[in-house]
Image (tube, rainbow, N blue to C red; front, side, top):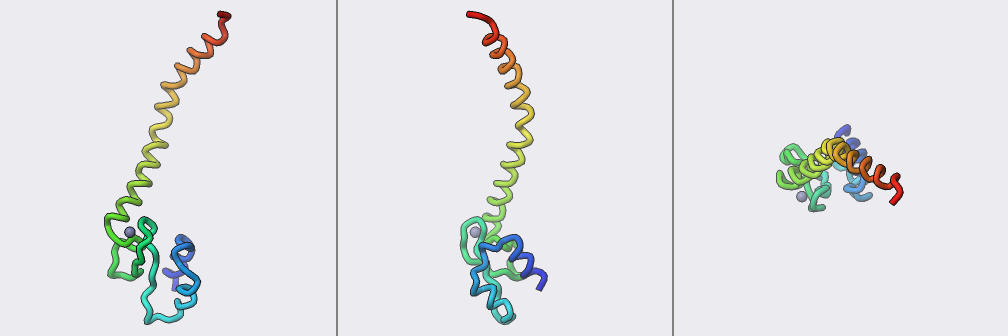
Length: 97
Ligand SMILES: [Zn+2]
């Protein structure tokens, strides 16, 4: 199934070998480990937060990504203010004391 290939692609660590072997058995629901708390989660339409176990874990994960992008977005401003300081320090270092 395409969805199972997707899981294997993006979350290879969440699928133990036994689960991969049992994928042929469609009567068995697919279990994955929540990327956030490693809790076992059933991968099915009933779980809108899959592969996370809950809304909380999904938000935590999205929050981690948001923090990351916020940090990257904030870097240019920090570099700009630090540049003046660097130049001032370079000027001071260039002068004989
Ligand atoms: Zn979780």
